Amino acid sequence: MIPIRDTQRTTRFPIMNWLIIIANVLAFMLEYFTSTDFSNLFISAFALTPANVSLSNPYSLIPFVTHMFLHGSWYHLISNMWFLMIFGDNIEDRLGSLRYLLFYLLGGISAALLQYFVDPSLSVPTLGASGAIAAVMGAYFVLYPASRVVTFIPIFFFGGFIRLPAILYLGVWFVMQIFSGFSSFVIGSGTDASGVAWWAHVGGFLFGLILVRAFAKKTYNRLPDDRQYPL
Image 1 (cartoon, one colour):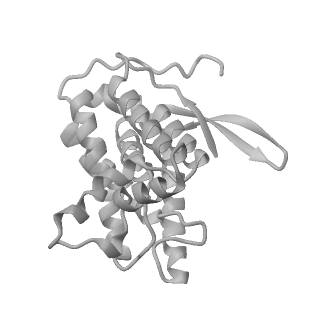
Image 2 (tube, one colour):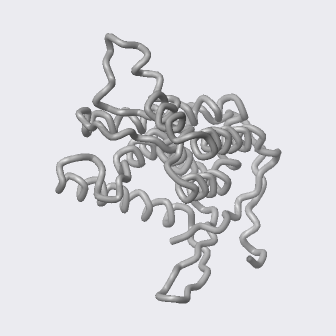
C-alpha cells in the first residue's frame, strides 16, 4: 500500500517538518557525494551500532540521535521523506513547531532504544528516519483517525487508488511491522534479510500512540479534511 496523500488540511505552513526533511537530504548528500572513505567514516561515527554502545562512553550514545538523519540509499531517503511529508505536517500543526521537533527526536530515540534492547550485540550500523517517522504515524493514528489516506494498491502490473481511513491504513501498517519483527527472530536478530529494523518501527509507533497527547496543544482550531474532493 503506497500512500499518495492524506485529506486532513493544516492551518499553517509546516516549517519544522520541512527543516527536518532538508536536514535529512543534506546529511545524505554528505554520504553520497563525498569520497567512499569519508562516507564510511561518517556513517561509522553517526549511525547507531548497538554493539558499540557503552554507558561508560557518552560519545557512543550520540548516534541514538544522529542515526535518524542518515540513510542507506536514495530509495531509503525518498520513501522516508515521502511518509514524513504526508503525515508530519498535520502533527506539527497540532503540536506546534518546537514541540513537534522534540516529539520527533524523542520518538526516534525511543525507536532506537527498542531496537537496541532487542539485539544489543548487533554489529551492523542502524540508520534511517523511519523510527521517528513511525512516531509521527502513531500520533496521526490517535489525532486523525477519521482522516483519509489516498492509497495506491498495486495489483500485478496495474493498480488502483482507494481512500482508506487513517485508522485502518496505519493500523494495518503497524500490524505488519509487528509481524515482520517477530519473523525476524527466525534468523536470530531484530532485522531480517532485507536489513530493516522492524522493532524500531514498532517502538516509534508506540511512542507516538501513547505520548502524543502529552505534547499536543490544549487549544486547536482544526480545519475539516477535504475528503469530498477528487484525487
